[in-house]
Length: 229
Image 1 (cartoon, helix red, strand yellow):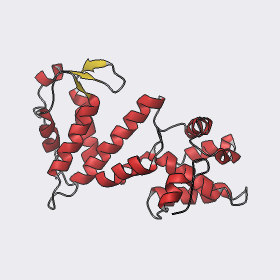
Image 2: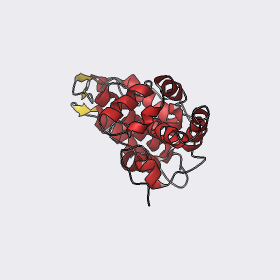
Image 3: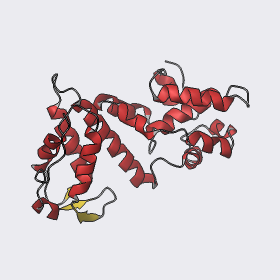
Image 4: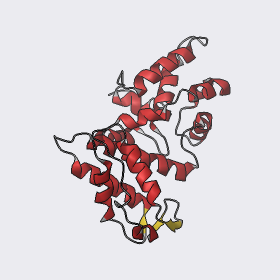
């Protein structure tokens, strides 16, 4: 059963450690931020977050990067995964997704929240097929409002790694990929119906009620992407 993290899991002395953020800046170790991430990753799972935090304490040192801290949390969770405690693989998956969110924030300046901006940027950089812009700005903004970032957290570690490495483009988040695929699938419908179909496709794909073939999920949104297996 989940327990509340104790103040002794990471000592206050360790709070004097300097860490290097993903953007390269130096700051003091903020214990509360680590604790918040641990509690978030463990929420609703049959695990004890104290053991995850305790496993991290031996791996902290002055000059550690926040990426290393995150990777160490992931490794700690994976090490505790067993047939008796399978939920640790979902904790590791959430931590992997958290790392993806933060990398994306550093690289492009925002996480979720501006889907139209993402589409325009990726069309201009040649990552997205320009046909996505057959949708109007208003339609793309409406579609962006459907995004549910919580659906990113339903993957175990293996699933999160596979999604990140095989299917996502550079500086792209999972729900953006799913939504763009859904919009392109819906674009063949009548103009008055296509947004409704796109939403149905998106919610089914994002919640894994349907599974797209690898070529479609990987290539549908890129210019001249091959859709053959």
